[in-house]
Length: 352
Image (tube, rainbow, N blue to C red):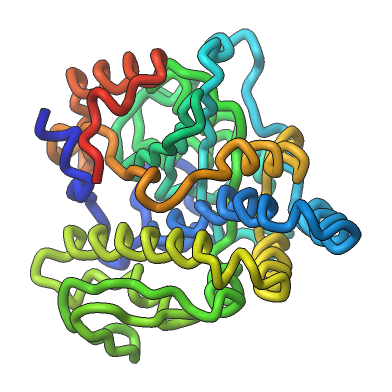
């Protein structure tokens, strides 16, 4: 089925890359959609913790650093009466979102309505047998029902009701329960990539963006150069198509770097990575270092080849009033919903 196999689905964007979702429009907005890539770091941290389980006191101190620095979302989930039943297969669903709010913590409450928008999000589905992880991008302009607010772009849910309403919206869209939530600020991006000593990313073409130049083939990226690589769209004739391709390439490069022996056997690099990232991470109360460590241990055989990326099925773009929106492919969505419910994504999604 075409929409399921195309991981580089077109997205829509207003002129400056910011969301044009309906809803409150005051103060600061979220950073651009590329920051969603960084929330994968919440899973990466868990994988890193596996590598340090045998180092005793040092590991305990690193775990304490994570728990002390990460922020707990006080109301991450909606009222229980509105939620799907818990999964019985043993699979896990984690909703990942991005925000620039941690740059100024006084401007946002991840639990409540605000001017913030998640113009990008991903659902991470961990198979019950822990042999594969599926990362589904949810288009920021996807036009969906938002409980209590009618239909709107999905990125408006956070503005209307924080994490809880966003979870409720996604749960009702997909028909499955979200087990955990992680939100990370893109300001942690620079320190994270620097702590790793850079990330090797393969670019399909040479280009220049925001004062940085990239060659065709492998580029060693960190800090501002890495952020510019995943943000840029104006340098390409097809705009968002190449940008999404670059984002996927970066995530694969990040996974290869984090899961590589040179990282996992270097306590200093692991410590620097966790220290740089954790202050910019917000998680639900149950997603503490113990839970992440347990998940990581269950995923100890994971590598980049068992991480698969795809995009929620869409049916092109359209207009609602003066807004450009992305339409849901209802038939494709029903297939995804059934696969999520039965822990059977491998049967319906082409591996990348």
